Length: 495
Image (cartoon, rainbow, N blue to C red):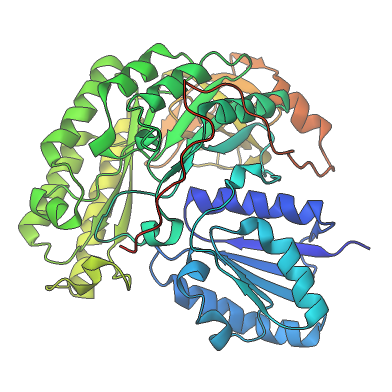
């Protein structure tokens, strides 16, 4: 019988995409995903070093699984991701029963390291300091058959004082546009109709080969791919967000009217301390220009509360900006120091109780603003890409037993909708009317006005009960006049 595995993923979309690659690698190596309630032969922790208490979560989970491993001698444990890259000398010291520790730059080595650990009966640790092979060359097992992440770059050249990512993911490395487009075309041929271009800073794409408009060109090129219905991207940086990108979004029909633009703070003083390279006026100017040409766009953001030295006046500036910007959603985080970042050593660290109180005020305001924005959509007709086939109850209707499915609108808002007996599949497209708005979701309880069966729905139906691993694309199409191969990226600097 095949060995089984399970993966526990923490952190950002990049980690989620890495876990898809880990799944693909393990399936290629002969593993199968463990069924629910059955102990896996291999447990992989794909870790984050950015979120608060990330290390406590990891070591707590490792502590709980130690007795399980002791009772199952053939079981293996692997730890990868950003925390593994950061704490390479600590993990085995605290948890010597871990079989493999691997970093962000060598995901592809996991099957070999597992086999080596088994043969040598000894823990293996391999942490590369820089990326040698772009991870998109690895096989991928996606949870979704109709939507996919596509990495256009890895690493980051910014020096935000609160962020440890550059020291863990390295300097930015850009893929050739032809390779990206070839991967997208292969995904579309496989049933995918929505892709999300992924990078630590997607709109700085092209910095490695000196083309400042490479990202807008890439968006336009995605618009020419037949069968690709929806294009999204995350996350851009305000300092690199240029008008040619806005133009490409407006003029490319399959680029969705959605923008996730991290703010972090509404205070110019705090933004300067964060080294964010823009100020509130520039941020608001970008939002104004986007809404001038895409009034229907849903704009979301990230905000950090309690950065060192943040005064009540600074925090009020953030509240004022949130009210003015009218975000459809805010992802709010309480600042916590990360060893190795400049902000960890700044004076005037904010007491935990003050951070918590500000966080609660911001959360209340952002919830009110997003609710107001969602209420504007009641009575509007929306096109949904069906995301979930299992009924959910949703909320906000007199009949609380209404069985609803889940979909995403073009602006990425989450919608619970009633199919009223009409057959729909994940990947199909439904047109319906919004009947109720909540802060974080919408409800459509009227019968859909139309249901369009898609190639993505066909792919979902065909793969029920099957395991599907996406074969990596090894041969790219011609790029935008970029020399081949690309010059090597500079060595990683520790921030």
